[in-house]
Length: 59
Image (cartoon, rainbow, N blue to C red):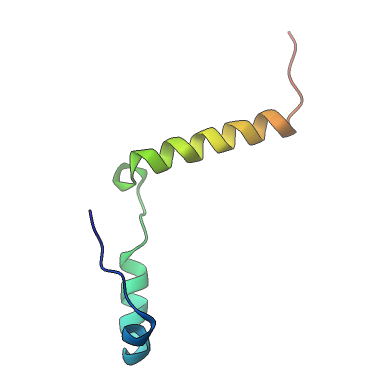
């Protein structure tokens, strides 16, 4: 999905409520709606961070 890119001039010409509405419309609240590539990259980054910071558990 291609979204409009707002210029600084366009945003400055709007009232604060309009700018807030544009900002809110850009928030993805459910991971089902998020791009899968973004979720995969985020998951990989989180797992790498856990491996780097958490001690390994030995059984």
